[in-house]
Length: 263
Image (cartoon, rainbow, N blue to C red; front, side, top):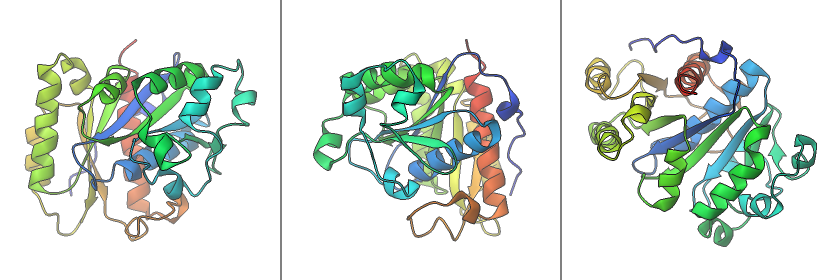
């Protein structure tokens, strides 16, 4: 399997907070897995505050995968507003042992379903300045007013892709769509992340995929298949195989470098 691109992004200084969004054209392509690995790799490498924000209105599996219970939701934080200090936020936002703070769309499915553009904007205003890095775990697709707002607020995107021709094509089309609606610069700062890749027998031609994506995005990163990720339960970073950890580090470094390439 071709090596992932080398980046020193995790060593670069952050002068103003960066917002990174993990998107995918359909469910089941590993968005939440990649968002967790990206946020964890960044938190471990930098020892800075990293927020993992759930932007999925379908009451996704983020909290389950993180192994922690929600304290407050984005609705609660939006109503509270910026408390003025991280110490106050610390009583309302869950945090795991890796130092990743996690904010769900809702504490119930109904509350998640009600998460929309206005709540996202108000919640981000409340937390933005307290976290040098915010990673948003988005729902499937990029249509709708909520996703338009999330995309427009992002310094870089991770486009999660399964190792299949239809998923690669959908991601390729998404990058072209970003170009067509005025987000060409953001597309060029995007990282395509191909997950669950069988190192010994990849289902697609990875070299061809990299060549196809090269004119449209910043880099392509591959995440190898890992037995620990297969059950879709609590993701424990220390239980990942060494190649998976290296890939998570590569993903975080590349996307942060891309996010820091703009003011």
